[in-house]
Length: 443
Image (tube, rainbow, N blue to C red; front, side):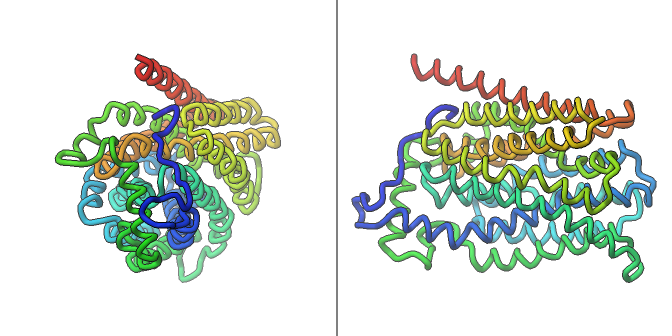
């Protein structure tokens, strides 16, 4: 799990089923699905993080303190966590195409509704409802990708998902410009942020319903030999993995390695969501203008794309995950430490945030490939649901702890330092798990 993946690499043209070019088949799969999946992830992160930009004017207009904002921003993850496993259970029964489309319609409508909140209480309620609506999307999409890509190519496919998440950083400057709509139709600019970022989710839901397919056997864009080849490759890899037969979903929930990975993901989401939901206000404290805040906030995720793609491909080539994750997580920890110690020198602090972003997004890219190295089928859906669901509790504590520390100290230094500490802990846990796993294999 944490060292080398199971065997099962793709050898183009070597399938005993037919002389199919495996690389060509996977390129078709990539062209058909990944651009759409990428757009969905961009919209997901816009709708999850738009509150961070809206807070630049919303908090003062509604009289919301830093602690209250941190609670409202993070409480989303409680409902998200509670409903993630049951949502993925439904997905494993009805298929990703229908269930992901349903998820997107509901979260888009909730996001639009958030544009009409009147205070701290109604904002908190809408964030809870957003968690209810979004529950199951991310692990559902990861499960979907695992049903189409063999192990040897799964890391590259997952890296493109993280790439689109990084590209969603461009939404920050876009949303700062939406604040300029203040007064249009009598609504504040921050209200337009929620309304206009909610609409694309509803539209894309219907595109997903039309374009996604649950299994290679349903792929009209592949020829019959290509469908047979991909189905066989994936079926062969699934042999010996946890995931098939009666009770497979329950076994995925109880798999010890899944529960240990939850701890790691709590640390990752603590740092990721704490950083994402507070970065706009942190940069504002440097005296930057609203539009400058947007563009500077977009730098770390955009700069992370190149290093992340390279590191993910290196992980695929070596078929090693644990040390790749540890290296990236420690880079993130170092970047946050630099930023925390340099708040009096904004240029250095921003450079620290950029280093942290490279490590953070790269670590996340490596991490999401780990469950599929030892789970498959319904157990994989359950595993993704548990890891993404319980692990996202860190997404509540990150923004909340940052808000509490800001109100208690009057600054952001300790909050940023806590993000770095969480990533260091994640690296140490994965390193410990890797050593334990190696000992178990050697016995």
